[in-house]
Length: 69
Image (cartoon, rainbow, N blue to C red):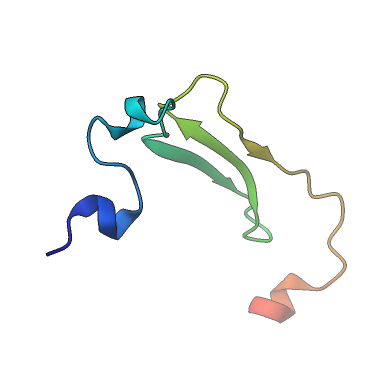
């Protein structure tokens, strides 16, 4: 029988502290409306200094309406 930790890859209750870190409870995700690219990914909960991602899209060199329309 598998439990939630086996399926999700996340530690079971109490394991986070034993391993010396707390994993985020969730992620706050922001998408660029024109391209659908993730431009921000912030951890919610967990360690205060957890890494996060932020991307600036400087230029798009294709017609996205034709590509996805």
